Image 1 (cartoon, rainbow, N blue to C red):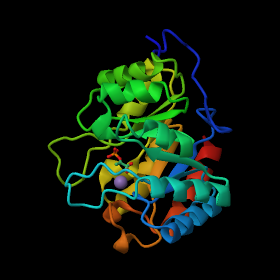
Image 2: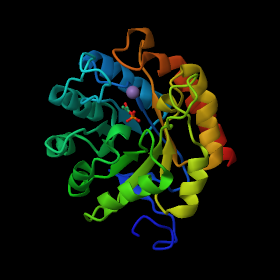
Image 3: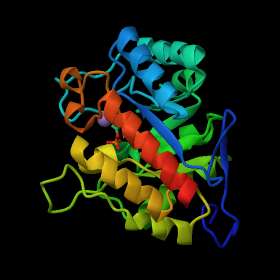
Image 4: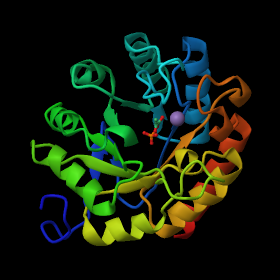
Length: 264
Ligand code: PEP
Ligand code: MN
C-alpha cells in the first residue's frame, strides 16, 4: 500500500508551499475554528505569525452538528484567508467539505483539510487526490487506524503523495472530554506508515485547559506538528470557543513547544 512503511521505509517529508512537515522540526497550524470576519482573522493571523507558527487555520466551510449553527463565510472566508497569507506569509490550511468546493478551496489554500466527519467520504477523498494540493487528513470520529490509513490510500491512489495525518480524538464512553485524544495513534502511525502525523489537542479534548499539556505530550510522542485553535476573544467565538486558547496562552504554548523541540 502507498501509505505503508513497507512500501516506503523512509519517513516522508511533505512540502507545503515551502514549509516542510516531517523533517524533524514540529510545525504549528493555528487560528480560529471559523473565519468570522476580516478583522477577526487578521488579528488572529498576526498573533499566529508573531508567536512563530507556520500555518494559519480557519474554517470557511464549517461542518456543524446543527444546521442552525454558524456555517461559515464560504468563499468570502477563503478570500480573507488568502489576504491574511499576503499580510503575514503564513501558509493557509482550510477545510473542504464537498466535492463541488474542492477547486474553489484549492484556488485559495496551500493545504486542503479533510475533516473528521468526511474521513470516509470516498468521493471527496478522490477529488482532493486530484486537486494538486497537499492534504491534511483528520482521523474520523470513530475510525480505526487501519480505516484512517485506508482513507489516505484513497487520496494517494489518485496520484497525490502529499498527505499529512491529523489525530484529533475519537469518540469513546468518556464524556468529560469532547473526544478522547489517542496519542498512541502517533506511535502506531509512525510504525505503520511513512506519512507525517500532527495532533490537534483542541478538538481532541474540547477544553482549552487541556490543550497545553496534550500539545506537549504530542510532541514528546513524536508528532510532526500541532493544530491548535486560538481566537482573539474566545468568549465571543462563533464556534469552539471553549477549546480555543487566548493569544497570551497560545504564545506560552508556542514557547514551550519550541523548547521541547530543541530538547528532542
Ligand atoms: C476543525 O478543524 O475546525 C474541525 C471541524 O475539526 P474536526 O474535523 O477534527 O472535527
Ligand atoms: Mn473547531
